[in-house]
Length: 209
Image (tube, rainbow, N blue to C red):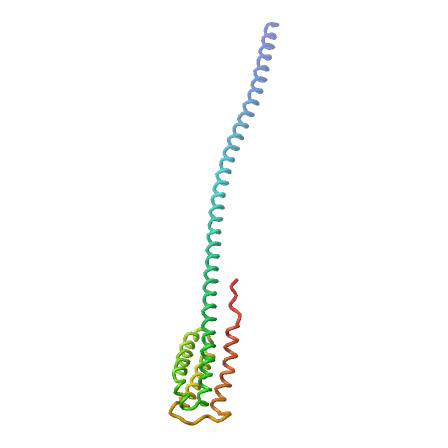
């Protein structure tokens, strides 16, 4: 009987040892499994994060490249617009200056003609023709830069001046009296047109910013 108790005691100790070892091994195994899973998950998450970071960097670089290209195109367009505006401003200034100069000479020839003798009109005929042609040519070149009503006003003024030149041509021996109405009208109309033309010449160019 004592033998049986001793045997059960031994068995109990062996089972206790086995359970203890099993518990230790189970704890160690569970800890290792947990660490392995966490390591695998951490590695996968890090790889996914790195991949996503790489994709975002690529997208960012592509976006920056697109923005820089758009900026360069915008700058190029501004430079082109500025260049065109400057060219147009220069052409307008040249055309209006030429018109002002030629119109002044033409009107001067027209209002002087009635005071000339026949000999003087004949001698000055070539000057009158040259002044007429130059003024007409200058008006055609400047019309695109002038308001329509102002261009019509100058054209009407030139027609009045031409009528004065024709009326006191080489075939007319008469001299216009002082204060001649048609001559005075041409001078007054020219004064108004000249002031308007001067205002157009000195008008500020468009904003180039």
